[in-house]
Length: 314
Image (cartoon, rainbow, N blue to C red; front, side, top):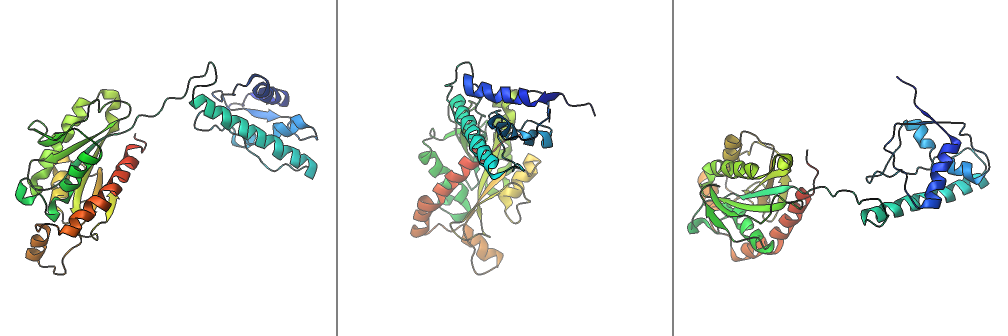
């Protein structure tokens, strides 16, 4: 391993002196350093030097998320008076660095551009269900019911039938922009074959995104969940789908299982008889349940969507 370049105490003191006098921030885009002759003596400048002793032990220059030097406060083996000086000085530098970091974000320090804001994900929200007015208010269509509410709450464009996408689509303008977008989609296929439509929509989204931004594309499938109490909203990132034929169809047609699922609880009947369960999921919601979906379920889904949008992507 090659020797690290040496920086003396004087060099470190000069860096901090520059911060004091020129109101500029030291960027740590250099090689790792080691510090020699860094023993503490009872003077203010060497107390300042102690604030960077962490650099020696880590062999790196720790930075905050804006690329500015972080200040650490290891406990010096000195008198109480020197420790007091050290705490005061290191606290001042911590404040100075974070104040300048905020100024950089607002572009207020001359000659220093504000850091680039990461782009948001581009979400394709697919609500599973059965097409046709006869199924519109049934428990099995809860995914599509919530997507219909989202179109109003998010003030998305009206749904339009698109044979190319395989269903009805609400496509926001400039959905590939830096702020991302939320595309709302309802498959035209019946639940048990909904994966075919979801795959077509997913392929269309990927095609519409420029190559550098394709990792931002994110699939989110919303569906009814018998195993959760009515009103529950749960997030999963993979799975076999258990007994849900819509998710099984999505997995089979997509060829992968690593996508976000928002599971919307419906509860289940006391009977485990398949005919009773089928009747339960195809029954319409009661009036109270219908109101609860809009009042409680939809707001929590919106919160979950925002968390997904702002998650880092590969």
